[in-house]
Length: 97
Image 1 (tube, rainbow, N blue to C red):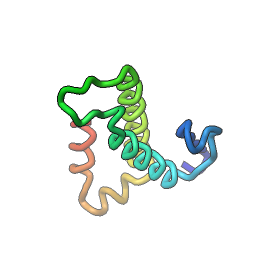
Image 2 (image 1 turned 135 degrees about the vertical axis):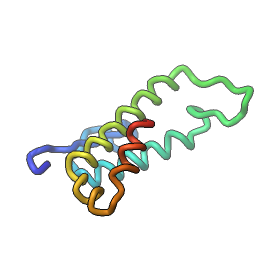
Image 3 (image 1 turned 90 degrees about the horizontal axis):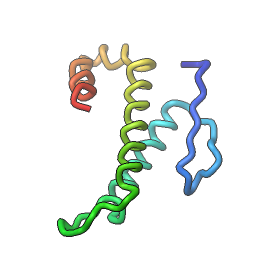
């Protein structure tokens, strides 16, 4: 929405929240999630490895940010999704989320 302000901070590269547009916010979120899921210290690949104590916090943050992405899509872009005949796909994706 035009009156809504998105802010992003990953706590590493960007420690002080910066203003950004909704597309920029979604891009930041998706890149951040990719970095987290590829970090073997957070998501171990060895089946004998234990998940770290921060795993639940990181997973919670990932789910929170994905939910915000869904909110942006539904609020600001649903007409486009419907126009392309993809509403049922988006709804199914969100339902499984």
